Length: 320
Image (cartoon, rainbow, N blue to C red):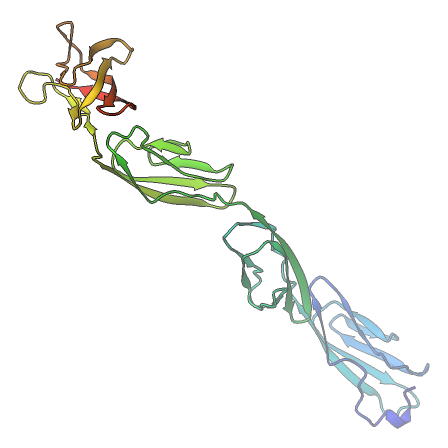
């Protein structure tokens, strides 16, 4: 009970300060037990309030209390300060992490204090593994917890050779990319299949993308070389009787026990055929000039001393 014996002492009726989040409310309260004849008067940002041991604090500012009683030598005063802090906004969103990569979690709300379940105290943290993550944000007397789930997804898993060398007479000049199912593929040639045929030397790039893991670009450098028993086949000729490149004929570097060449137009009509290794096509069919166009060659051969038949297919451009 409050009486005359305590009236001369410095009162400690209220906490030194009260803090809470904007939008919430709290109370300023006298915890001590008082005699029934004690009169209570509050002076608050809300106005004057009497005859209650606690008042609701909804506005920032100073709260004063005055106690008076016939038993007191003089009235007793005390005060506290109420501070209202902005509530940190909950802004984390569930996200995904690509296998083998990391993701940045950003709690935003700069200026507040942070404590992650990883024991980090920065606004942003780098996450390498899937799972549940939470951050506790402190702004004065305002504390908010935000949680995010990080889910793992399979990346494109691309595997591709950096450098490839083919023989000029190799019919399987194929470069391929190995990727996980669901991966979108785009080659520099415009193809979208896992494999493409390397028509010429140079650098080919392949772009792969899966889910939300972003795009990945890899390159393959393709080189050609002359291998044993190579057959060099021109890609064009100009049969205009100027004695320069007037004939189409493969250049042999080996002897063959069997040789056959057939040339057709784009509709499949045969315009030239021969089993003579030294045969040359002059761009005519039955004595008549063939039009400028792209023609298709089909060459079969068996090396002397061997029994494996090699088949070569390709295109030859006729210009005049």
